[in-house]
Length: 184
Image 1 (cartoon, rainbow, N blue to C red):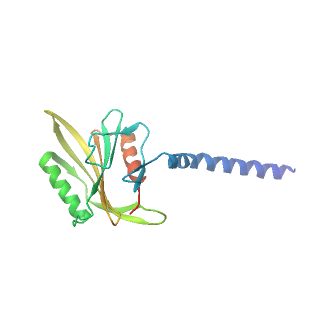
Image 2 (cartoon, helix red, strand yellow):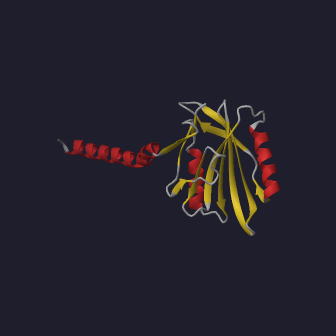
Image 3 (cartoon, rainbow, N blue to C red):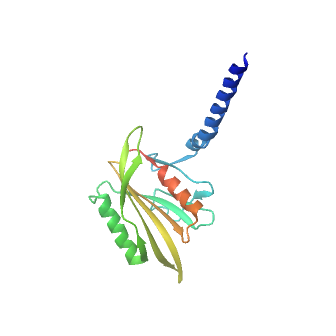
C-alpha cells in the first residue's frame, strides 16, 4: 500500500469515527424514548428526570427532576373540544391569572411538532413568568406552554421551572419539547 493510500485510509477512518461520535447521542437517545398516551406520543426525557405522579389521573404523563424544581406534564383535551389552540392558550393564561401573579408573558409562537415520517402537526408555544403562592410561600416560576393538534386530539405539554432558571435546566426543557413525536 502506498503512502498516499494509507493517508486516505486513515483520513476516512477519522471521518467515519467523527461521524459516529457526533451521531451516537442521537442514536442512543432514540432507544430512550418514553412512549405515552397509548403510544401516540413519544419523547426523550432528560437525564436526571424521572416519572412523576404529581398530577396522576389528570395528565397523560408527568416527569420531574430529582430536585423537584422542574417538571413537565402532558394533558390530552377531548376530541370534542371546539376551541382553537390559540383559544386554549388564552383560556389557560386566564386560568393562570386567577391562581398566580403573572409578571411576564411572551408572544405566542406557532410551529410544528414532528409526526410519523414526514408529517408535521401544528403547534403554538408561549412562556410566562409568575409568582406562585404555595402553603404561604411565594415562588418565582417560568412556565413553558405548548399546545399541539394531531387531528383527532389536542395536547398540552406544560413544563415549569423555578426562577432563576439555570441555563442547563432550560436547555433540558427545550430538548424535551423538541423531542416530541406524535401520532393521530
